Amino acid sequence: MKDRVSITMLDGGIADVRFVRTDKMNALDAAMWAGIAEAIDDLKARQGLRVVVLSGEGRAFCAGLDLSSLGDERTPGGSSAGGSLAERTRGISNNAQYAAWGWRELPVPVIAAVHGVAFGAGSQIMAAADIRIIHPETRLAIMEMRWGLVPDVAGMALWRTQVADDVLREAIYTNREMSGVEAKELGFATHVSDDPLAKAMELARVIADKNPHAIRGAKRLCNMLAHASDAEVLQAESDEQVKVIRTPNQMEAVMAHMQKRRPNFTD
Image (cartoon, rainbow, N blue to C red):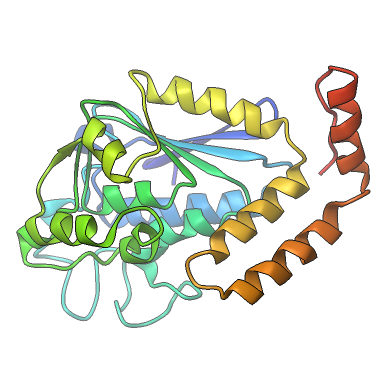
């Protein structure tokens, strides 16, 4: 993993996660797919984790599939991520989809700080973040149609709550590039910033100072919105509230606000 992805734990339970294959603009080869999966699994097991900031070192967030692996490793029955595309090897996803969907499965919020390019699978990994902060000059494209392929790294399941249907269809069918500014306007990004990583870290510190159990419950609720019925969402709201109301962390949130101090939560 360390050759492709780094994890640095910062104060407050913030994980600074970076793609570090800088010589290839963080493009995805077999080792990169494996490194991302390993990083996600590592983060799932970490105690005290409050929020993840995901970014890319060097000139880009992620340039998508390493084209040198397109002919050699990606076939109709498998992918450069390993395993069959049809087989569910990672819960509800295959190995390639897990590189994006796995971030959505993390119990804590993920903030993506995006610069340079986010092409193909890079745009789909970006979509998995709860909040997406992009540089105005970033080049973003759903690139698969250029190579005669369909988007297949969990983007379809993620974009449906972010982007209007017709906008998404045009972006897929044409594989056209858009700037970070346009990506924000169309729903692919949350904020535009000249320093996405600094903005992401600022936001991460705000989230890290909230009741961690309430944050996790809120993420579970947000993750339901694409598929659950109204009745299921209403019930889940109540269930999640019961888990946190009048708990020590919830009371600490109230007291810290009233006393104008930073809260001291327990995990």
